[in-house]
Amino acid sequence: AQSVTQLDSQVPVFEEAPVELRCNYSSSVSVYLFWYVQYPNQGLQLLLKYLSGSTLVKGINGFEAEFNKSQTSFHLRKPSVHISDTAEYFCAVSSGAGSYQLTFGKGTKLSVIP
Amino acid sequence: KAGVTQTPRYLIKTRGQQVTLSCSPISGHRSVSWYQQTPGQGLQFLFEYFSETQRNKGNFPGRFSGRQFSNSRSEMNVSTLELGDSALYLCASSLGQGDWETQYFGPGTRLLVL
Image 1: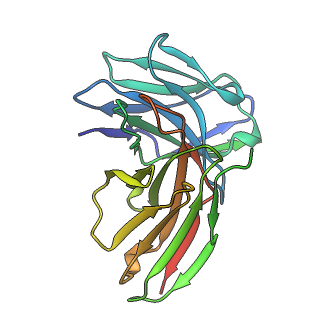
Image 2: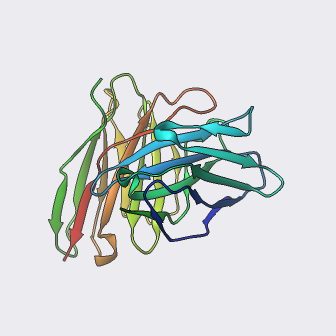
C-alpha cells in the first residue's frame, strides 16, 4: 500500500518570497511522484512529475521538486512566488507498471500575500 | 485539442436517488479514471477504465459503478445516494498505454446530496 503525507495544510508566504511545500511518501515498491495544482473551482493541473533519471525535476510556472529516495520525500519549491500561485497543491504517487491509480496527499493551500 | 469535459458541472440530488455523471476524454485517449474529492477524505481513486474494461478499482462500496463506451466516453453511477456522497467528482484521461502516461483532469462535477 502507498500513502502520501503533506506536512503543511496551509502555507502563507509573501509575494516574491521563496516557498517550499513538503511531501513524504510511503511505498513498498518503486514509485512515480507527481505534483498537481488546483485553482478554485477547477480540476487538477500537472505541475511536474518524477518517473526516473535526474532527481531534480523542473515543471511549469517556475516550480521544481527534488526526489530524495533515502528520505522518501518529494518537496516542491519555487524561488519567487506570485499572487497567481495562490492555489491548492497536491502531491501524488503511483506504482506505475501500467497502474494509473494515483494516491494523493491531503493538499497544501498556498496563500500568497501581496 | 479540446480538454477533458465533464457534464453536468453541478448537480443537486436527494438521499436515496441515483445519479449518472459523464466524462468525455481528450481525443485519442483510451484510459479514463474517476476520483472523488471531499474536504474530509481528500482525493480518492474510484476506478479506471481502459478500452471499455475496468482495469483498477478503489475502495468504494458497490453503489459506485462505472462504464466506458467504445468512443472512450465514460459514465459513473451512484445509486441510493447518501449525504456523504456530496463531493467533487473528477475524471482524468490519458493514453493509457505503457508504464505511465500523463493524466489530464476535467473541471469536475460538483454533487450535492440533500
